Amino acid sequence: MKAAVLENEKFVMKELDKPKLDGRLGAIVKVIGCGLCGSDIVKLRNHLVKDGSVLGHEVVGEIVDINTQTAFKKSDVVAMGHHIPCFNCPYCHSGHYSMCRHFKTTNIFPGGFSQYIFVSEEHLNNTVFEIRDLSYIEASFLEPLACCIRAVKRAGLHENTKNLIIGLGTVGILMGQASKAYGNEVYGCDLISERVKLSEDFGFDKSFVIDSDEKYIEEMKKYALIGFDNIFLTAGASSSLDLAVKLARDGANIIVFSSVKDNSGYKNNDIYYRELTIMGSYSPSPIDLEDSMNLLQSGKVNVDGLSVVYPLEKLNEAISDTISNKIMKAYIEL
Ligand SMILES: [Zn+2]
Ligand SMILES: [Zn+2]
Image 1 (spheres, rainbow, N blue to C red):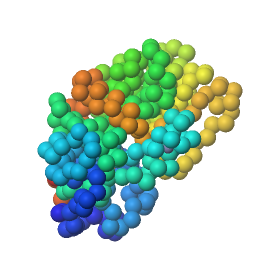
Image 2 (image 1 turned 45 degrees about the vertical axis):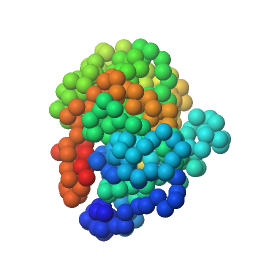
Image 3 (image 1 turned 60 degrees about the horizontal axis):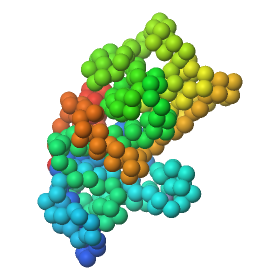
Image 4 (image 1 turned 30 degrees about the vertical axis):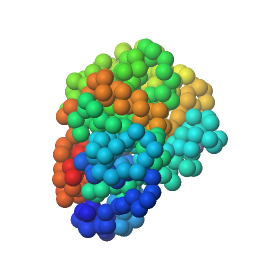
C-alpha cells in the first residue's frame, strides 16, 4: 500500500506492507481521507517525529476487514479518535483522561496518511463512530472538534458566560462554535482580518482585528464589560497570554490550547492577585468524541469551506500552505 513516510523532514511516498488482522480482534480500515492537524505540524517543527513515521489521526475510512465483538461490520464508514484512556487510574478517576498513561500508548497503525490502517478492538469499543449524515470532510472534524469540546467543558459549562477565542484559525473557529453550542456568548480576535470576518460568518457574536494600536482592546472591553469569563488561547503565539490577562475579568479562566515556541509567559502576580485560573486542555476523551459526533450530526457546528483537499502525494505542500496561512485546514484525500 502507499503511504507518506517521513524522511529528512519531508514526506516521501513509499510502499509499505498493508496491515493485516492476523487473528487479532479489530479492523482494517481503508482510509478515505484524513485531516492535517496543527499538532502534526508542531511535532514536525520541533523535530519530534522520527524518520520512517506515518502521521495523520483525523481519519475517515471504510472497514474492509473485521474481527470484532462490537456491532461494527465490513463496509461501515467510520471516523475515529486515536487514543483511549484506561478509565481506571488516578488520572482517569479525576477526569484527566488525556493524561492517562495508557492513553498515549494506544494508536491507530501506521497512521492516517496511508491507504490502510489497523484499528484495535479497544478503539472500536471506545473511539470509533459510524458516519451517517455527514460528508467525509465533515466527519474528519470529529477529533479536532472533540478537543475543543473538552476545552469548553474544562472552562465550565455555565450558560451565558462571555468567552473569548484568541486565534481564529480552524481550531479557533471550532472552539467558538463548540462554545456557542453550550450556550455561551462568543467573541474572537486574530491578526488576519479575513479570519475575523470568517468567524462572524460562523456565528461568533463579534470578532476583532488585532493591530499595533491598542484601540481594539478598548473596543473589546466595551463588549466584555468587566472582562471575559473564559479566554481560549488557540494561536500558538506567546503574546496571547499578555492579551488574555488584559482582557480577563478578575477570577476568569484562561485555557491554554496550543504550544508556543519559546515556552514563556508565566504571569505570577496577575494569577495571584486577580485569582485567575490558567489551565491546559489537551486531547479529547471518548465522551468528548461522542459529543463531537452529536454536534456535527445535528449541524450545531458547521465546518463548510474550512478544508482544502490535497492528494496524499501533495502532503508536503499541504503542510507548507497551512504553515504560511494560505489555507485554514488541509484534508488529505487517499
Ligand atoms: Zn488532531
Ligand atoms: Zn487511565
